Amino acid sequence: MRHRKKGRQLGRNTKHRRALYRNLVTSLLEHERIETTEAKAKELRGLTDRMITLGKLGTLHARRRALTVLQTKETVEKLFNDVALRFRNRPGGYTRIIKTRRRPGDAAELVAIELVEKQGEAAATPPSSSTDEGS
Image (tube, one colour):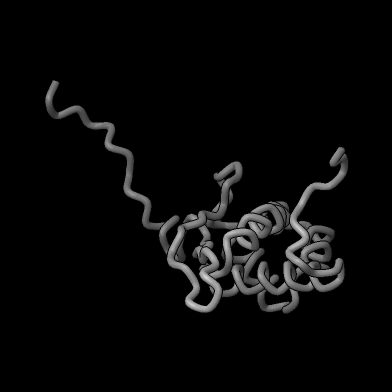
């Protein structure tokens, strides 16, 4: 039975795996698009979604919880002041995974994981077309 065995081990011990996830989520929020292996990207989705949800809360407690995972204060500032505002009306699903290539050394499946809404895209959404010209 595999009760309480959720998550991937990725061939690392617990501390190394946790540090890897912290590095990946910090880089993703900082650069808004990173390339990594498919297994790492799938694990990263949940952690990134949790961080953006904390940013949407905007409380001091949420900021301190985000600081326990994210590694730089600048990334936390960007999360709370920029990224969370872009996703304020979105209930979830803040990232997308796009398959890109195979790594030449070991043929590992590489993917790009990125935030769904790009910088400036939320403000530049087209107005809804409520005019009916044909009827």
